[in-house]
Amino acid sequence: MVILTEDFNGFGNQLLLTSHFIANTAEYDYELLIPSFGPSAPYFEGTATADFGHLPVRLQPAPADRLSRLLFRALQLRWGYGILKRLPWLQRSLGVQIRGDENDTDQDLNNPEFLAQARHGHVFVHGWMFRDKKHFAKHGPLLRRIFRPVARYQRAIEQVLAANREQADVLVAVHIRRGDYANWYGGAYFYDNATYARAMQQMQDRFPAHTRVRFLLFSNEPIAAADFAAFDTGRATGHPLEDLYAMAGCDYIIGPLSTYSMWASFYGETPLFHLHRPDQPIPELDEFVVFEDQETTQWQPSLVS
Image (cartoon, rainbow, N blue to C red; front, side):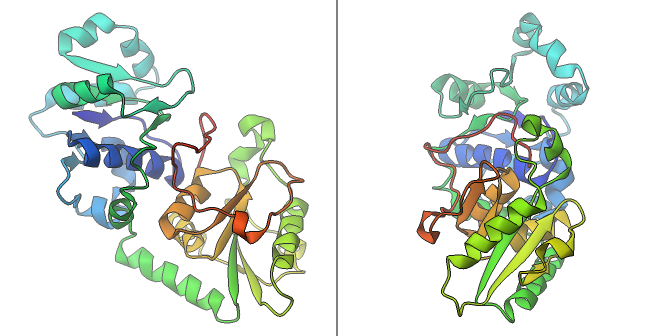
């Protein structure tokens, strides 16, 4: 049994991490508990109804499983992981293993030692860098079914996309990430509006002159419309989930490095290009790629969504 314990801010991180474990248990058939996903569960068809198909996946430990419930709560505390990780004798006496990712390196879920413990013991996973890049794309259809938004959000998403496509031949999502990006990685991905406008102009130039290109702008802060007045632009609803899946419904996605746009690209099978520096040119359209998180994917540690 594997129990996910760390609650990450934002849909991108939570969806990607949980999906890697679901893909892994689909491949190896061990019991998976995802209580850390609980706050997001009502948004998605599979998690809202606990419908994971044939998979042994549950949102919460069984009522009789007091040990799992107790350790999950302990790991939610500020210093819970730090204390329990330093008590290997306690883990052994309880018959559990607590795994983290202190070295900021990928933890391969295909590791035989991990799989043996997952099948025959209790593994409490508290970290971000756990990946099954070997099987993530293989189980893409299953993941898209589980994490399809419930009807009320799906309707709003479809309305946004329909309205913005009425006068457009191509719909390009522009992810203007602000907020916490002012400090993350020293502000390396905190771009000003001039950076996005420059990228949008280059993107528009990739299409024939007669093509009606509309840019659907997404941000976690108010957008200064005047800075993008030279372009045909639209907005989504501003709801984090509806924006995420409206982004997935576009034809292309551009923006800074982010799990938010990664998930949108994966879910919608939408070609994506990440700006890794503010002066990076927009490439030819055939160089955009759909994010599938395969073994060649380069991850940044502690990536925020």
